[in-house]
Every structure is written in structure tokens, then in C-alpha cells.
Image (cartoon, rainbow, N blue to C red; front, top):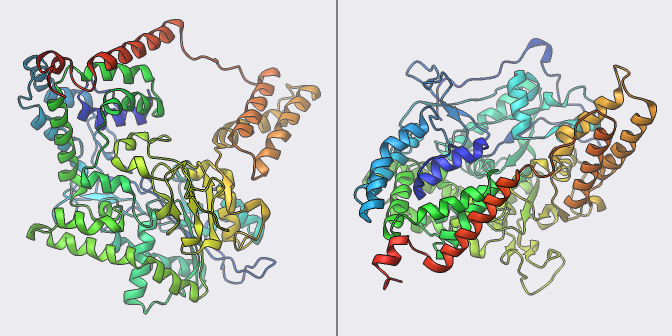
Length: 634
């Protein structure tokens, strides 16, 4: 079972009450990366490409899981869990030690009582307390400050100054090797990592403060590089920092964007996501078939587990009366809202601007939240003004580029547990953020549906009209692109070419037209290519010329596909499989099992699927005892 599955079940399945849990920062002294003398940067100003386009350092504003924070004591030392590990992380910070034991202790007896007494006898309160306990590390005060001493790890130096572990972590989170290579090849520098920086910011915090901090960070980077401008690359949640930064420049620096050369947004949260809006609004898809039959098996499969586990959970859930299930789901949501969502300004930054006022009035109108409301109102102003602020920057010569994914609903992809939000039925997104947000204003129909008209900026499937974007000619779209775009090599190559000025707009290069195809080359890039290259090097003389030639033929075919921008996932999968098979043929590696499941596992899956289907047909969307005791209830 994957770590993601364990964490997901610990958090979400607590809400659905299965019998067992299958376990898926602001600081005055942030941890920084030191810059070694041998890696001191040469001045960037004056290093130019053939087009006389100066090499400026690039600052990445990363996504929601890319700014690790750690629970620290009053002296700034990291707090350890009972296993001796740091309590920290990116998105969700949970003390995993004794996690199952803690959950069972709180929930076992109330759960059994609810099952045998056919009523909620304190289970909803137990669920609320459990959720609050799970998220205690990231608890937020009413004024928007963290209740605990959370320290966000920061990096004052470039990527080349990172420790070996931090460097490896960076590329796992943000696989931007192609960008670094593009800098090296275009500008003739020895190490492109000398010109790439990472600006981290706390998830429990104020995005406007992060925007103000970026002003100082840019000055530091300029000083290190003896240059007058930087590039900004926003990724996912990093888009909220761009919103805040642009408004900070507008309010406090007379709208002077002379510090910026280029801005590149990659699937960035520039105007929130309906997922978070629905969480605050409590807008769920509670259709009986979806909730009791379809949802959990699909989530389990997407999170690396077996659909059979999801069907077993479906079967177990029906031991609870339906009103009890709804009560504990409500209690779980109350726990999440009260612990994190309501009081965190950075989370409010992910509420779509057109839903903000109503939701803020609902939660933040009391005196206790007056300070927080000032913070969230300030960010709302920044988000509403983004287009005008970017227009001001563009008028001063700043290039603004945007990469967006489209064609998916929130039920698609790895994070399909988001599919429970009501907006799934009407969204066109990358499975996490809607196109209207990542593209700065595209007009869309529901994923897979047509707008019913065409123009020069309409997507091939007719579902997106890019003409309403902030900058239609500098906005690219990838069909069926999941939010984790980092392993789409075409997208990262495009980012590199935009940074170096090789591509200026959607008409610059026919290989990078406005409408591109999503693909994931992670397996090929991370493992299969390196294995083939190691084998062909034949350092120990183990392989014959014929064996090397066999692998090279498959390797060259895969490299050709990797080099183009039009091959889809089916072609990528084929050349990956062919190269793997060639490595097996010459004895370099062993063939993997095609099935991965025993006969018993396959039969068990068929049985529990059949049983879940039968129960759905006979019992419907309710608990077993609802059917017996309350058969007149609909």
C-alpha cells in the first residue's frame, strides 16, 4: 500500500468510518541553504544568447506540497514524533506515530455502539475530535496565525547550493532538468542550476505576506547575480503568491515591474479552484450510487491500492444508518474547517474570486475574525486586480506566458477523491484547478462538451475558447493534462524555451502550437533511459556488440519519440515497453510480472465487486438496517 493511500485513508476514511484505518509556517529563523565558495555565482548581467537576450536568474514559486514546514519548539528545534522523525511536511502535516492506535482508541467504541444501537450515540463528536487531533499541527488561530510554531524551510541560494538531499528532493517535486539544460545550452554556462532559485512560503500563512517577502527575495537574488531583473515561474499554488506580489508592486512601488523580465505560469492557481470553494460551501455530490458504490473504489484505485478494498469499504459502510453516516461526514468536515480551513488566509486564497464574498460573509463576519478578514480581503483585491496588474507589467516589457491543462473533471486522475465536490459535474480542469483559473480567463464548457461555436482560439474539441484569456497568444493548453504536469516533458521543454526567449508566442514554433497533447514520460526519463545508457556504456565488458546494438535500436526509437512534441501517451508507452524488453532480452534486467495478482486475488476482486453490485441493487443508497427498520424511508 502506498504512502499516499495510507495518508488518504487516515484522513478521508476516518470520515467514512471503516473498521480500520489503512494508514495513507512562519518563522523568524528559517532554515536556509548555504552558498559554498566554489559555487558562488558569476555575474549574470552581460551573459547573452545569440538573440542578445540577457540571462536572468529564475525564481520558482512552487506548489502546495513544495514548501516543507516543520513543527518546532520555542527554541526553534524540530519536534520529533515517538519514532524519532521530524514532524513536518508539505500539504498535510500529521504525526504518523501510533496513528492507527490513536484513531481506534477514539472511534472504536462509538462506532460499535452506532452499529449495534442503530443510532449516533456520540460518534459524530468522536469523529470531530479525531479529525481535530489529526490536524493539530496545522491548527490556525482566528487571526490567521499558526497555533503552533511551524517553520517553513527556505533556500536563500540557487539550486546549485542545495545539499545533495535537497537537490534530489527538488527534482522529485519539480522535475525541471530540461529547464536547467536549456539555460546551459542557450547561454553557454557550465551549470544552469546557478541561475535557478526556489522561493518557499508557508501553507499556514498569509499570501500577501508571501508576496511582500518575494519583493525582498528578488532583491537578494539580484544582488547575488549582479543583475537588474529576474524571471518568475509559478507552479500551482505559487500562482497565489504572484497575485499578491503584483498587488504589492501596484500598491507600494507605483506599479514599477522593472525587476521582472518574464513570468511563466504553469497550471497555476491564479483565481482559485472550485474544489476549495465547494469545501467551504459544503457543496457535495451525495448521489446514492456515487457515494455508496462508485466513489471509494475509484479513489482506492487512483491512489495505488486495490479496487477490491474500496468495494469492501462500501459493504462495511452500510452497517451504519444513513443519517449516522451523514452526521459523521458533517462532523469530519466541521473538524477540518475549524482546525485549518476557516482561519488560514492561504487556504482562502484558493477560493474562486466570484465565490469569495459570500463565503467570507458566512465565516468571517464576526469580531473574532476581523484581523483575518483584513488579510483575506487584501488578497481578494490582489486576485481581482491580477489582469490589470499584469497588463501594467506587460506594458513595461514583461513577457507573460501561461501553460494550462484542460479536458478533465475532478473525478479524473490521481486526486480523484476531489470528485465528491458538486462542481465536478460542471468543471473543465486539470483535475485540480479549473481552466479559467490556470489560463487567466479562458471560457470553457464542461470537460468533453462543446461550447457550440468556433473561432481562431477554440480548442480542437470545442470545449475551450482561449480568446478571453489575459494573453491569448502567449497561452498554451495541453489536452487531458493532469495537474501534475512536471512529467510532461513537452511542457517542461516549452517552459525552458520561454525562459530563454527561443519561443515568444504560439506562432513562434510549429512544434509548440497553442493546443498540445498531454503525456507522462516519467518512467522513460527517470529509469528506462538511465538503465539503457548504463548498459550501452558496457563498462565491465559484459555485453556483446550485437546486444548493445539491440538496445541502441530501441533506445534511439524512444529518444526520437521523446524529442518530438506530438506523440501521445500510447506511443510513449510503446517505446518505453520496447526499450524495457530489449534490456530484458540482453539480460540486463528481468521481466516484470504482467499480472501482479494471484488467482485468489483476482477471484476475490470479482466476488466483492459482484457482492457490492448486488447490495447496491437490493439495498440502494442506505444502510442495511435502514432497509429493515425504515423501509418506508426514501
